[in-house]
Image (cartoon, rainbow, N blue to C red; front, side, top):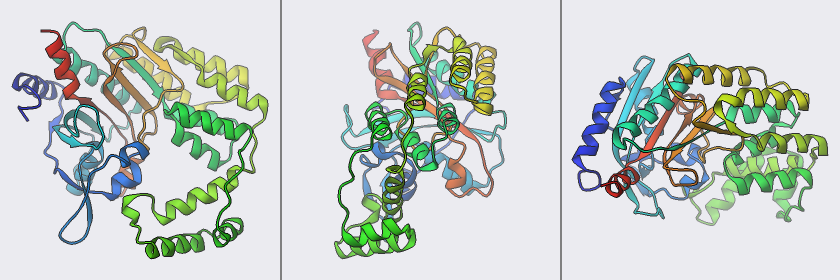
Length: 374
């Protein structure tokens, strides 16, 4: 670890973990691949290093820490609330700067006070940078998956469209393409006869079976890409989506929402003003947002120094609320990224819902900035 991050940097981060009350945990480098392939987001799925265990199970070198930390928490049957810290290598293909690099972070599990835990995660991240890169200024950008989904629901979009747009949240190109389809759907490529018939009939089980048989016959592994069930669901969704048009007024409201870009201390009023003008109710999502802003102030975070961008998201499928990113300066490479993932632990096998929020820091980027400042 010392070859990729100085001993001084590692020591400073460990001290920060102690000060913030986060327990440093050891996480196995080799992880089951399925949770990442199912939940980690398309960009990360393409970068995973896959391998196979002695028993034939598809494994991977850990590409991030959030999912493994959550899996370890579930296996240990530990109580909550609990704060975990980590520091170690992650592995991703086609990454600028090398495929093996160090990440550190804190995962905050089980705190029922969502707003307070969100604000604490932001404060944890800022405290880490203040300790490791003192005297520097940073650009902090915050988004909210829950607010975005509340707008989609208030506009009356069907579930399929809400899911597609939610998956596109944070990717400007994907979101633009989805909005263009929503305004005027492009013609769908012709599907093979049996597939087209099953899609038209809405027979998902038969469609999954047909796709699975075709993949097996072609020697394709579901672990290397989308599963037959996921492919079938996407085909069914696309057929449903093409029957929906969004009115010009509703599309205009959605684009108006996505254009909101203000200081955090002005964000709640900007969202309330948007909702009133569009005739929409954002319900509990806006209440949680406002409570988070107040909690951030109690944590000593300046609402004037944090930017809220309604179109900002992060390319991981498991986020459900707060998403944030900290860069050296506006437009610079991110140093820290994080967010809330309240559904993740249940999807990973927890018997009851466990709320979670956390962040990770790219230590090679921190180290580069420390070197540049000498």
